[in-house]
Amino acid sequence: MRKIADARALDQFAPAHVVVNREGEIVYYSGWTGKYLEAAFGLPSRQLVASARRRLRMDLRHALREAMESRAMVIREPVPVEIDDRVQNIRLTVEPENSPEAEPLYLVPFTDLGRPQSSADPDMTL
Image (cartoon, rainbow, N blue to C red; front, side):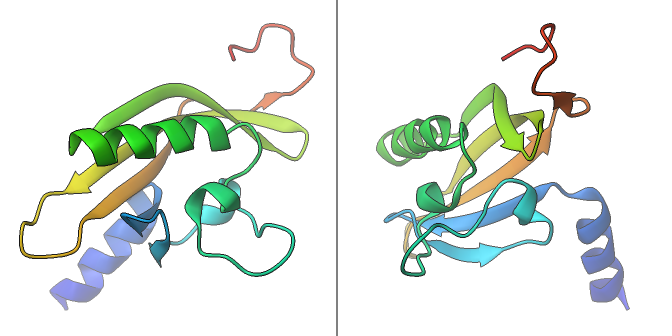
């Protein structure tokens, strides 16, 4: 019963996230990642940066590289993500799993900051 309750709490209250390996390949998707990731054109790929929505890719690439080199948590905010005709600012975190006996893995949660803004809104912070 506890596992079911824990899983439901995570689904409802945890931000959308992925886990990637040291090559940047996604090894786990949580629910609701479609807001931040989309299938890239061409052959299927598990590469996180290639799957990221426009304007998220550069910040994601730099944050992943920094976390992999430093083996420390990296946080970027606000990072704008284009979702249809709206822009959602997010907190992008890359957190290394520092387990010496396992392959290095990185948790990448996407945390919304405020509400989406119209991409035509001149007061939007980018």
